Image (cartoon, rainbow, N blue to C red; front, side, top):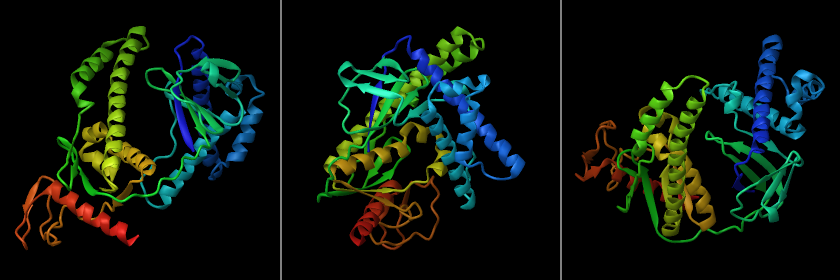
Length: 369
């Protein structure tokens, strides 16, 4: 499967798409209400086919005319999303993992709806896509390859609308290659990646570098009157700053992943507990985007033949001596950045030593596979 993303031209007709996304948000909230009411009355989980049949009957009523705005398949996709969310919640509850059930969403903040077999038509030669009998122009950056499976309409916080086209195109398999290997430990200061071979990667601070503009825009927004046009303009200005930082971060991640995969055949990283790190390093985690970078790195590695090995998060990479393998008997707090091995006397930098241990453990896992 391959996904293609295109941005729509700004036009007055896009107002209709915004109304359809709002309708999807109303359907989400209504379905969630039915789920909660059904569980309160019968103590059971509302099955998806029963919910879909009920929504089909509601289309005949005037008060639920918004059910007809996005098509039957888009309505079914909303029920699919709620069903997946509840199944994930119940599975995590059984495994004693903290997770909240699906929540109500503000209609204006609802983002997307998905069309499957019908309701859309792509006319590539005119850079036009027809959605629910209305034509829209988009910026054509590439050709759509493969048979189209689904089309998702999504809007961002600024109000721009994007089209995500999912096809059945399968890329040619790239076999793993031989070459250099490296281990990386994630950093939280001036380095995003600390390398075992000394080629550390510096971390641009995309969000914090614009902290003055963010504070100024936030302060301006807080002074505007609620539900006024000036407040909406201030909100859009703040959203543009966040989007600009997000785009710069995403561009850096793709370029870095391509650079690393072209230089190394085996990359060993730590399987981080992102929720745990979020508590102590919230701003840094948000600014660096470790989770997104790992996903991009795995995708690029599959296309370039590089192998990615994730070392278990409970592996004591910072507590073991990378020279002799001796585990330090003293528990090292995160504030301790350097330590000396009591057995061989080697002086270690905490992050550099962890990167070397991650490489050793990752190589062992790779050879034993």
